[in-house]
Length: 421
Ligand SMILES: Cc1cc2nc3c(=O)[nH]c(=O)nc-3n(C[C@H](O)[C@H](O)[C@H](O)COP(=O)(O)O)c2cc1C
Image (cartoon, rainbow, N blue to C red; front, side, top):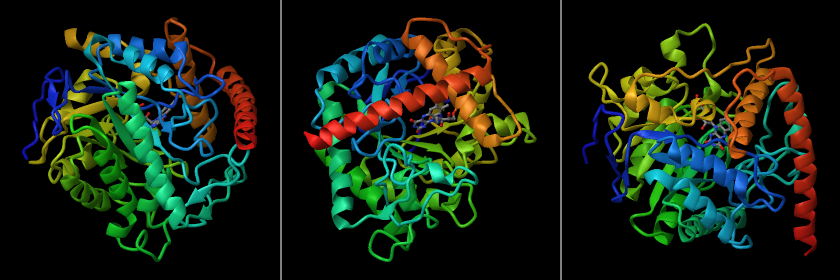
């Protein structure tokens, strides 16, 4: 199949399964931590997604929705399995599909990237804990998964996808990036198994392939099935660009509608930007260069996310370079938190958006502050308020930490009540 290399950001994209996305701009997944007390979407999430839909993006990817209630990336996240009522998801889908936008649910299992305070019983391909200097104790120490655990994870991804379809979502995106469970299976650093799920790249990709296959078999052909993949872990001995190319080859025959390329993990958070010393062009759209090599072998459209703030940067990602093709779609995260109507504005002209970046000495704390600032905008949008780019980072970070610790306690109590019931 040949891939459209239409450089117009506002040309529709026809997906292999038949779905049409009205333009080439996707709102990338951003975990909101805004679910209600029982981990369901409520009025605030509906309002937030309505704002993005009305802002003009063709595709909205939700923040990661958990497939297992006892394994969450953070507190107050949305959880969807058969124990949850579907009506709140139907209402969420109606809001996010306003203005002709397509709404896909990103579905995820965090594996070992869970906090010890919330999920002490973490599972992972191998018993390799997360290593972040000074912070490792905050994360759970995982045990290696057995065959039953693996079968259960496959079943859960398929169940959540089927429920998303029933609720009226247009598709799902399977999260296999950023160091979460499927990304842990892909990386030789975290997957040290010697069975059919580890060793060769084909074995390490087996869980992802099985999940894609099982999900595809459970949903209608026109329902979108996408994958978010790391172009690299940015760690020595980890999953590399050449591996990403091979994984896309493995996905080629599986009727995948869209592959999004990102990169990094908690240990090496490349998804949140390259070092400041790099050129503006490298810092903006930092995965575009990798993406071109993937586009060359992919039979599905490729989307690239990371650092896009300007229309010119987005457009450059579509154009061929050095004889290598451009991507079919761009994903935008933080810029859409600060300017949800950026696609509408870009349709008229180039428009600037201010995305404040905290650059304190401690990179890990700066990262948390940037996340907290972005999440503040999501909550403001959820209340129908305008974004606030000039919020005081230190204060926002402190408030965010307090809020997260209250929500963690609430989550633990909720989980405990479920276990007892
Ligand atoms: C607050 C916040 C939450 C995020 N949550 C997710 C998530 O749930 N799933 C995911 O795949 N990526 C998540 N990301 C990463 C974004 O999708 C994206 O890859 C990253 O922000 C880089 O793109 P940007 O420069 O356009 O923001 C998150 C990013 C931010 C800032």
